[in-house]
Length: 110
Figure 1 (tube, one colour):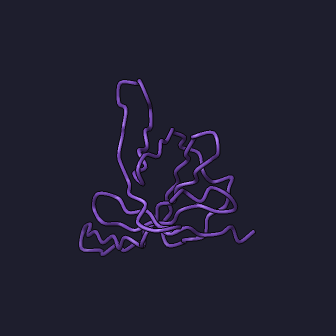
Figure 2 (tube, one colour; figure 1 turned 90 degrees about the vertical axis):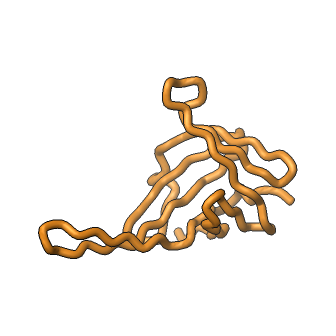
Figure 3 (cartoon, helix red, strand yellow; figure 1 turned 120 degrees about the vertical axis):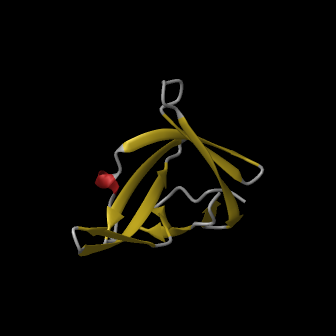
């Protein structure tokens, strides 16, 4: 099983965010998306209250590797604050991270 890297991105399940400040309630629906590229590069972007992404929004860039249906993503490789995490390919077009969030392959709408 492999990553789908053409004509779309992987979109997370919605994360409902609630916060209170000075007696006011703030709510958001947060989404994270990953864009995997052929050259083993990955780009990440997050949004609130909108789950439609387009290619020019993805700016945070890292690298990825796929081995035995495990996708390892690294941001800031070799830098002081390198960040690395893993996701599992659970079926064609679906990834799951360590906290159980599902990322579903979504085709571009543009």
